Length: 60
Image (cartoon, rainbow, N blue to C red; front, side, top):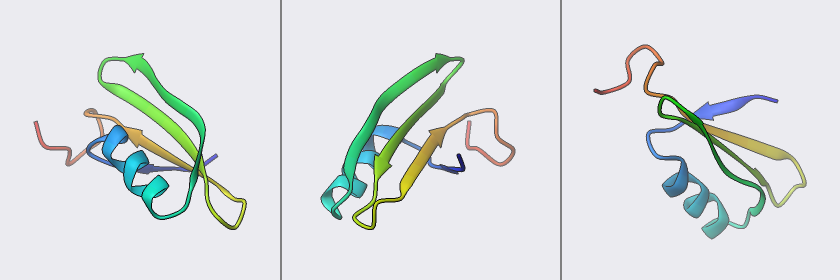
């Protein structure tokens, strides 16, 4: 599974759902600021999003 880095997982999921995706896996908090979620795009593909403050270039 590939995850797209986003600054706010909940906002990203809301936007994807607004654009026609359906929730597949709710936001999961792994600790340390790392959170993920999965949606199913209208074409059936899964799209993963990840919020990870430890990624290089992430604003503090």
